[in-house]
Length: 426
Image 1 (cartoon, rainbow, N blue to C red):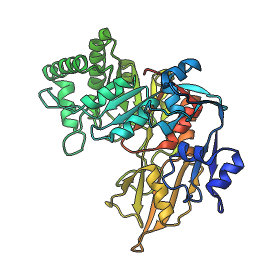
Image 2: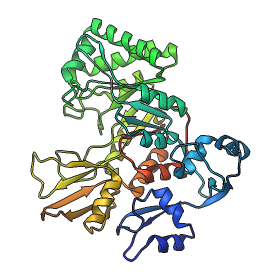
Image 3: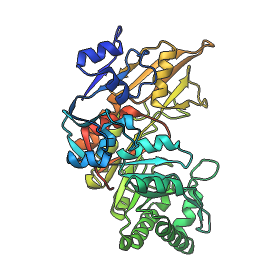
Image 4: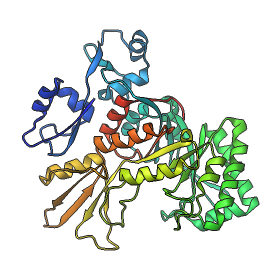
């Protein structure tokens, strides 16, 4: 696999000719919406098929997989043109394997809301070990608030992907309630009710793991939070249900701030089966323009985490979005959240060249809109994703977890599949 960065004068034809691959493959592997519009600085993932199969009458994905000693899921990953569907037609050429040798194995989780586009979810599921519907909440009495998760669970199970129950203290106004977490962590009766409801929901709805995400916890509740996770795990372990806990991106134990003080890395990692490092949102909606997940900052968090826990417990959080800021940045202004492919489209529409920040390992650009207003955009591309996946592999982490799956990012899945074997479980 190669990652080509578009240069002035490049066309899809010239890129295909340079690497000796069909233009159709570049279009399919990168899911280019308009192949005639390449942007200077844009990335194109180039793959080299090693073995292909021409579909014959009577072939099915299952029979093709069996005859080549692979799996249907791997065929779906190798052939994004199928869109996650098993429908094939005679004469169609499918890639069985690539020349690129995969360098490691990762578990892959992703979050999705019930409103996710079904076709987008369908073509994403083959790349996942687990799918986490977002999110269950609870009341101050410990009663779970409902989530319309039936379709997501069904889709996951049909794709042989593990569904994970997500519990958070997110309120209807979109903020995390430290008061709600305080009640659940300090009132034994409320906590007992909450755990009982979690056990019942896991069993009734077929969840195979539980992900706990309490954010902005009071510093004085840090010990109680770890004790809650330990108690929940002791109840779920006999059912074979692991517990994951989401951790704020700390870089040292006594880090100050509302986001960090309630998360004791050592205690929580001991209490849980796995942890998710929420390594994103350095560049955020209300902050100044910068990379969402600068690799140097991500590495600092991982370096600290490894002083408190084993790498096999850790999932690295990866963002699947970018931001578009209006310049000059003013405190209180709000950046617009965009998808990574949308960022490239914006650059194309405004004839902007994409640059790459080597220190952050992130792409960015500036443009002027139709009203004369200047903007700055930071997002993810094949290079930045490869850097994050390489970091997870180099450190021996269990896997990666994407926030979130609501927007397309075809290059991410192409790079992931080219470099890593994907576990069938968490």
